[in-house]
Every structure is written in structure tokens, then in C-alpha cells.
Length: 249
Image (cartoon, rainbow, N blue to C red; front, side, top):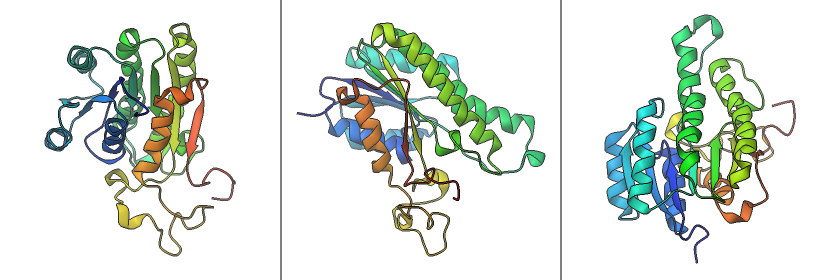
């Protein structure tokens, strides 16, 4: 018996990195999965690899019409929708003085507005007892120099999550956020070889002095997607190796 047997999930940004890890994990636990991404070649390759219980849809999370299409694909192909993982996002560094307004708005559109669109379009068709998991970041909890756009967008996910949890509670749909620390993914230019941080590296001062693997984040997402988290909503789940445990990081 899988922890997600009989459930249908929709995962954004699922072609690589954490998103692909979520897709694989959900399939391994018995779910049927539709995943979207702007990376068409990688998405189609993953779909082919994973088989008939998985469908890829080319999907720009900032486009509202795309949300209508991917939600319809999930419900038409697999007969319903129980889980939404708002995973797609962008990361970028730079001081405020060097950013343009367009740069800042891109963070908001991809990291925050897209999650609002996901809730807007998926929420009304989700089964009672369903689960929405919004991927935020430790930088939604604490700030960092050079990350104003990213941090602002990820902090916004916290407020979105809490308010949506209250709105969707009458239909027994739970909404929670996950706040990863440093994860070895292509988005941060890391891979499995970087899980153990080199001496003096940015992660070396943590209580758990390394990057997380994508699977370690997927384990938390799986818990929140499953019925095991039936009493959790409007909450924030931190997976950061102790990064936010002290102020000295």
C-alpha cells in the first residue's frame, strides 16, 4: 500500500530538481501525477521514463490560461485532483541598486502570483480532504543581502498559504508551506557531489553541515500531501539543516 494510493497530484516545475523528485516520490507512493514545466524537452523525457501514470504538460505558471489547461488535463486524464504542489520558482542574486523593476516583478510573478493562480484554478475542483503544498524558502522566514526580490516573493507565500488555508477549510482542503534551506539542485548550481559541504563553505556552519538532497525535501512534501498530515493546515514546515535555528548564520 502506497501512502498516496488512489490520489491524483499536480506538480509545477516538475521537469528537474526538486520538482522531479516530488514527481518520482508521488508515483512511488501510488499517486497518478500530472506535472508542468517550461522545460519541454526535459519534461517529455521524464514523462517517457516514468510511464503511464504520469503526464507532462508544457506550462508557464505565470499564464492564467495555462492553469486552466493543466488542471483540466489532470481531471480529464485521471478523473479528479487531490494534491497540488506549487513548486515552480526562480532564484536570483543582486543588490537592490542593480535590479530593475522588471527583475523584481519577475520574482513576484513566478514565485508568488503563480501560486495564487494555482490555488485559484485547482482549489475549486479539488476533492474534499485534498492538500495544497506551497514551496517557499528559508528566505521567506529570514532575509538575506542580495535576495530582496526572492525573499519578498517567498515571504509572500507565507501569507498566501495562511489565508488560503482559512478560505478552503470548509471544504477540508489543507494548505501548508515548505521552507527548504540549501538544496543540491540545478537552480543553485549544485548536485549530489555537493551534499557534503567543503571546509569553510557556506553550509559548513550549520548544525547539519551540508546541502539537502531533493529527496529530503520531497519527504516533507509527501507527508503534507498524504493523509498523515490530516491535522496540519496554515502551517510552515522548515527543512533547512538548522539554518534558521540561530541568528549567527
